[in-house]
Length: 359
Image (cartoon, rainbow, N blue to C red; front, side, top):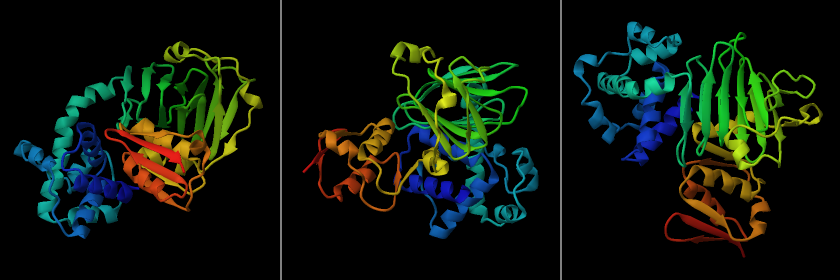
């Protein structure tokens, strides 16, 4: 995973001389997550045989020199509260001095710039909103991680008894730190999803879809956390979609609605959860056969460039082909795939609009 993520960020840096502020923040946060990430990033630079040139370096050089440390030493690694494997530690120590100077400055800037976000992200109770083309990865004060998709809104309410996250819009993946004394619950307008220590996604799309990647979660009607008669247990590789047409916009905004759905009688479906949750790394993997309308919806929610379906029949038209791996922040990559599909006409308008229609 570290190698894959390092390759992703290397390509981003090479392709985007002027990186968006939020993307720069995500890159720095990823680099300071562990020395293993930095080692993989430097390994790719070395394999490519070139020195990475990026405006980010100009900012790095402004960092106070007294704060630059050789993060390849055991002492500095211990400050990260992370113990890499012997092979990784050896890789870290044998990097070129110039490359390590670059990595050290990255780590320092990550810390320096991170101070501006640390107070916000470590505050136990807050509301966080993302917009189009923005992904947010947060570490909560209990050690849990939240991967927020674009156009998503969450409200975090932690107490001594319970860890509660309101998902008001969009979707998010939760990697829950174990704490049996404080259950972790994601609350939506229809259902509540509770876990002790696991990895799962909750999406409002409409209705609510819960997808479990690791462990077990308990799905209960909204506000009925102790109602075992109507609950549903979901295991790794299972997905449950609950739809309540009576929940309006006001109910969703205030976390209301739902509450009386008998989930025990609903059937979960088997899915490739890891494949479905790849969007947290910025990628969408397609095997062919997916309805084009569903794919378009995923790109539209995450980008300013919008793809409009001119005919109703396009939405249900299956994508032809066997395997596609596309960057979610690049709708152009998907448009190029559509241009190769027989029977579909792609019309590029000026501005942020691409129209599709059947021949």
